[in-house]
Length: 271
Length: 279
Image (cartoon, rainbow over all chains, first blue to last red; front, side):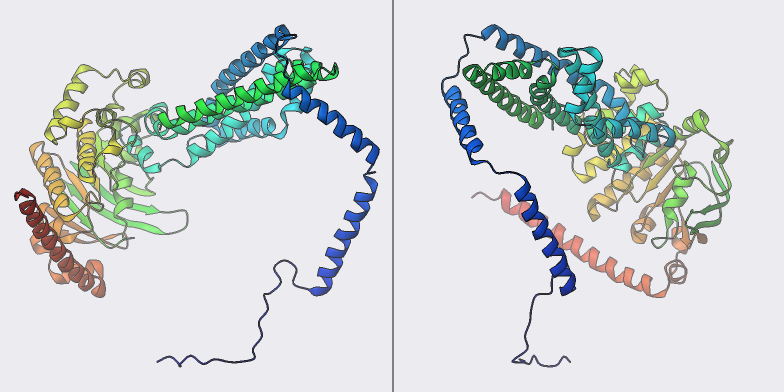
C-alpha cells in the first residue's frame, strides 16, 4: 500500500544553479569575466572613420558583384579555374589512394599494435596543421604555383580520409569478420570480403565530400601562393579590379554548389 | 571424428568459462549442446576452430591437434570446419553467391578471390548448394534483401561449400520463428546424416534439440553435467543443467511459445483462406 498523495502548500522551489554551486564563486567568476570583456572591448580601438571607409569599400565590392566582369581577364580566370580543378582532382585521387592503406593500418581491430600506432601518428600530424599553414610551408619549399597546392591538398586529404575510414573500420560488425575468418580466409581476404563491403559506401561518401572540400580549399590556399583560382582572386583584389573578383567568386560558388549537388546524388546511388 | 580432451578456457578477467571438458563425436553424429547462458557453450565451439584461444587441453580433429596450430596451418584446419552462426553473420552487402563462395576462401589465392574468379568446380558446387537450400532464384540478390530463414540457408550453404569434416553451429534458430526454426534444424540434421558429418549444435531450445539431435551434452558453469541420448533427458537431468527455478520457468515459457505458434499458424491458414475467397 502506498500513502495517498497529499498536497503540501507553501513549499517553495527554485531551480538549482546549473554550473557553479557556490554563490561567492559565482560572483567572482562572472565578475572577472565581465571586467575582462569590457577591457578587451576597449583595447580593440573602435574607429568610426575607418568603419565608414570600410563600408564604402564594401559597397564597391557589392557593385562589382552586381556587374561581374568575366571577359577582360577571362584568360587569367580560365587558367586559375583549370589549375584549381587539376589540383583538386589530382590531390583527391593521390590523397585517397594513400589514405586507404593508412586507414586500414590505423584500425585497432585489424592492424597489429606497432602499425596501428605508426598510422595513427601520421594521421595526427596531418590533422594538426590547417591547410593554410601547410601551404605556406610547401610554397616556401617548392615555390609558387599549383604543385605546392597539390601537395597541400593531398597531405590534408590523408589526415581526413584515413581518420574517418579507420574509425569506420573499428565499428564494423565483428560477426561478419568472424564468419569469414572461420572459413580459413587469410588477412587480406578478410579485409576484402568482410571489411570492405561494410565500409565501402562510407568511403565513397567521404571521398566525394573531400573532393568538395579540396576545391574550396584550393581557392583559399591560392592566396598564400599555392596557385589556382585563389591566386587569380587575390591578384584581382590587389588591383582593385572588383568586377573580375566578383566574377571569380560567382564561379567558385557555382562550382561548389555543382560539386555538392552531384556528390550527394552519387552517395545515394552507392548505398 | 572429433575428440575434445580436458579442455580449459580461462578469460583474462579470471572467469573460468570451461573446466576440463572432454567428449568425443564420431562420424555422422549430431550433438546438441545445451545449458544456461554463461555456461560456456559459445566458448566451447569457438575454442574448437580457435576463434578464441583455449588455455589448456587438447582438441583432435581426425589426426590433427587443433590446439597446436598457428598461421597457415591454422587456416588450413579452419577450412575443414564449417560454422553456422546465430545472427547468420552473412556479409550483408555481398550477394548470395559471393557469401556461399566465401566458404572457399581458405582454398584459393587472394587474387583469385579478389577478382571473384573461383575455380569452376567451386562455382558448380555453390550452384548445387544454393539449389539444395532452395534459393536458386536469389543467386545475385544481396544478402540483406533476404528474410531470416533464407539468410540462415545461405549460412548453411556457405559452411557446406567448405567441404567440412566438422560442423559447428551456434544457436542457429535464436533469431527465427518456431516454424522456420524447425525447418532449419531439419535441414542441418539432414545434410549431416547425408554426408556423415559430425556436428555440434549450441541450442538453448531444449525441446527443439530433443526433436532433432542424436545426443545431448549438458553444460553448466563450464563443466559437462549430462551426456547421453535425448530420451534420457529426464527432468532431474534438466534440473541439474539449468537449476531448479530456471527449468520450470523455461517449460512454462515453452508452453506459451507453442501456444503462440499454434495461434499464429491458425491465423495464417485462416488469412490464406480468406484471401482465396472471391471479393
